[in-house]
Length: 102
Image 1: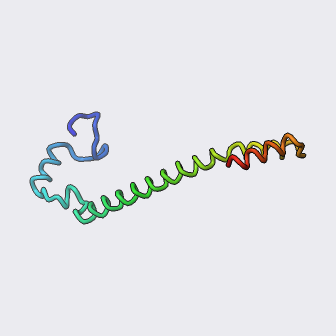
Image 2: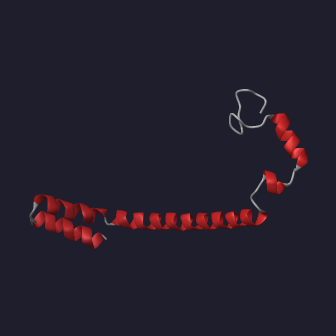
Image 3: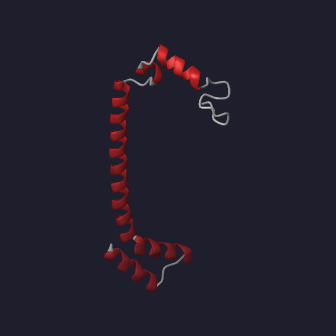
């Protein structure tokens, strides 16, 4: 880059004229874009696989979050019992109701 404020290759990198000279000497894709078509295709397959896996995990998380939400009253009742350290008739009734609702 000829702009003194831009250094694409770092401070000691070549200027535009030098880059142009190098391009005219060897403009092969292998030199300027070293990733091969095979590696690119492999990366695309890997990306697709990871996207599918992420989607699967996301869907599973949504399913289990819904199930967990259904058990929330039961969990709250158990927490109340544990906090109080004892169970009275009201707690028992709430626990039974939550259990039957789940």
